[in-house]
Image (cartoon, rainbow, N blue to C red):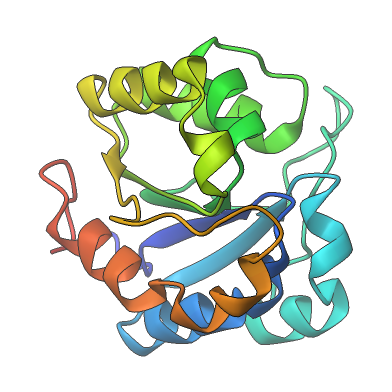
Amino acid sequence: MNNRAPVLYAIVTGARVAESVGKLVDLAQADGWDVCVIASPNGRRFVDADALAVKTGHPVRSEYKHPDAPDVLPPAQGIIVAPITSNSLAKWAAGISDTLPLGLLVEAVGLGLPIVAVPFTNRALISFPPVQDAIHKLSQWGVTMLTEDTPHEPRSGGDYADRFPWSAAWQALLDHPRSAHP
């Protein structure tokens, strides 16, 4: 029997609310999970990678490793991608793996891992038909999507950052039908 803690990949993309991903790390660690933070190149601009590495015990990865290099992160048992931008949603649903986070997400759908996605994007962007199609497709493929009932208006995201649903995202992963660690 493996007594190792289950591993959460907390993936962030380029939205301001990524700076508070430590809240998700705290929630998962309180429940006994090992957490690895992975940031898109734009998401990395919003996080304190050094502080997160200290908090998690793992480096914050944002680039693909060399194929011959060992992986410094343990394999995930669950993934929360929060915040995810409309750009990353559309690329993910199209299978575009041009960043490490997108590659991990595309692969995770194929592996059938429990995944929760929490978009943080304004009303105009999330209303764009290909983004709506992406949300629908990802949901059909087993991804739990937590979308705002009333998305914020363009250029007002900062006013909504404090309401970002970190706790709801964590609970959604625990409740995910594919989760082996409810």
